[in-house]
Image (cartoon, rainbow, N blue to C red; front, side):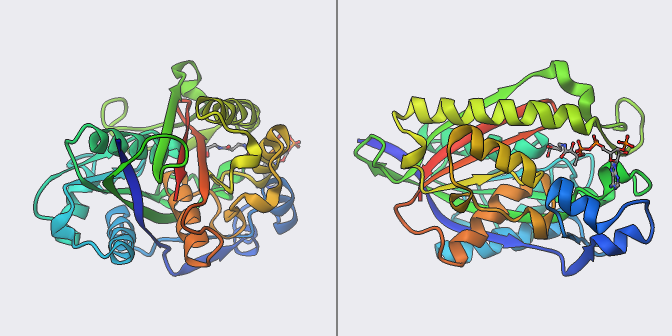
Length: 324
Ligand code: UT7
């Protein structure tokens, strides 16, 4: 017998304001055609003035807790993966803890940019398996609209705001790859690529918030290679092949990256959850947003084998394999 982290709830929240490519083309030298052809993105949600990462995160968390039929007071671990915290400190997770009425346990943030949700899921899973937590809320929440340089067409068209969450609960399973819950997680980072995707500000280096800067082509090249490797690693660690996976729930950066990864690994695109055309890149929020969408519309069913993967600034990358 072994302790597994079951995914007992999923939830999401998107700000109500939608900004289309055409609207962006009115203020920056770009076009709907270019953005759709190079990225697959058609629109993104943008947070309202005064609507912060913690607001998005709290809404997604409550939504996930509702599906799980678990009260906030019964949660003993809350993790927010974000690169756009409300404040430099305290952790956005502390604000979310207060907002949802979680009165016990402990809460903290994790920073691994676009891989943040995979990192947070892995950390929560390990807390549950070690017995230090029983019920965890794992959130990916971002307001990237606040750190974009809206005059840089190479980056400002790519990102959006949003939040997604899952509720994990420890449960005994017999052990093996037919178990429900998180079956494995694999994390990687390589700080040699720090400067290829970063925010050029921060409290210690510049006392400013800064703006997102990216060498897009270089990041793209590394993404396809690293994602294919981390997926192969997850499959081989669990004695599985691509054909065993019911759904790939990837980080949504660019439709071409998803297609490149699918092709390299022999996954049909029909078994990939794709939201990038409507959400754009929501960094740490993209995987739990996609997961919540595919669960609520009935594509993902109980018992399905899911492979989650992401790559982002750092570089960081990783995967999580779970039976829903
Ligand atoms: O989530 C974390 C990971 N992030 C990513 O995975 C992003 C990875 N990178 C990408 O998705 C792609 O590299 C981009 C979408 C950022 C760029 O696509 P690309 O096919 O690599 O284009 P490029 O950067 O090579 O630029 C091609 C051309 C350039 O013009 P010239 O030099 O060929 O004349 C750019 O100036 O497209 C131009 N360009 C644009 N044109 C219209 C760049 N951005 C735009 C734009 N509208 N928004």
